[in-house]
Image (cartoon, rainbow, N blue to C red; front, top):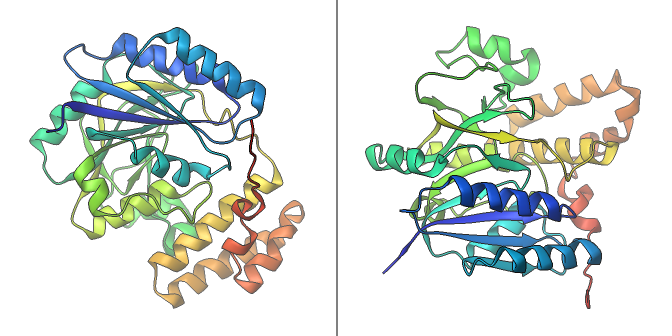
Length: 305
């Protein structure tokens, strides 16, 4: 019998202080009636950060925290999938460690799922570090969005407009942001979880696309909210921009018929020609060798740390 309500899986990568503060905020805000467990995946951080993380977790004195260290950086999807192997909850909450709870998010999400059996994944309303509402969802990246942007998608469909505001009612969307994804464990297992071919970015769009194909919805539940510090462990660089495009192209090829993918690929190539700082993407766009050029291929195993 499953006695754990929620397994909270979070990834630490050289951000141990964030991880500690995240756990403390969840403990403070979550209803005592819910049984939760934390599964912290250290994604091959530097030795000093990992030792600090070990010390911090020990000081928290919570027997429901599991700390697991990977000897190689598995990326977002791979790290989270490692965590699922140790999860026992009825629900899985994949939450970035740069998030702070400001209220009890889980009770509202569970209530929504219990009343909406076809909801495959949900998320609360997102706020930024200045306590301003920010975007909590987006549209699937098809030809219209790639060629003409979000505005045309909004004008030519019945989708809810994506705005930086606090929505009043629950909203069914194309996909929610990956920083906070709340799944019934059975549904997550049914779709096969995250695609570990992806190292960073677009995991949430891919997951929600597969949920949609199975007849499940992705939902913003603004009854509750959280604060997101945004990208604390992924500094902006050309390599990160390249990884973003590699992931976009990979899931485009995976989830669309080939002609549609070629149109999207050509559109990205055309835009790149006018951005000299991104010309390093051109060989990848021409050859179509996406995963071969991913940061995942450059990760090295590190032992005795």
